[in-house]
View (tube, rainbow, N blue to C red):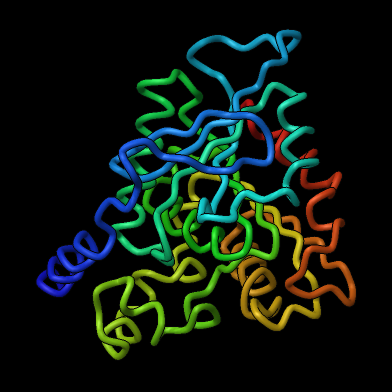
Length: 266
């Protein structure tokens, strides 16, 4: 298995080589800074609310994913405005379609180091995953539970077998499909919950019951079932009749905002 993982890591490092330009650019839903982390495009939308007292070493922030070309989008504008008004910054880094792979997680660790060691932000951000961003962030969280305050998801992917499916995910992991299937519990977020439970990390998700791309039962509902069975705490909101879409209720969810505000300063 060790040899398999070494080969996979080498393959992944090659496939996730820096794609960003020397002077990165990105369209953000609100004004912020775009910069490079480990050769990849990253962003930071800082809070400018001077009425919120925070120390330089404990500035709260939300870690958003996926930071692909179109994400975060205008759909997140209202949500981000609520967080910024509460003194909570938002940041993320583009790790490509890594599906939570070891190479993608390594790039995530580079952003965490940049935000905490270089920029003075809190060591334990709230993770906010939209769709496949959930797969990326939950995978990193399982490796780094001591660096996570909480996780929140908007129809988050929690299960590699459900999305993108093992055949598609295997390439990102540098493995053949049958190899990934054989070792799925070592990589799949819904199989790697014990470290998060041990660290008492609260989870939240809003996920429609008509989602066909990322089905509720195979993702957020399964996550809650397994997490609570292990003794963890998770809040799940299920809007009836909603699918994997841009319904405003996903992005203007008062419960989501309250959850993030609660844990961003812990």
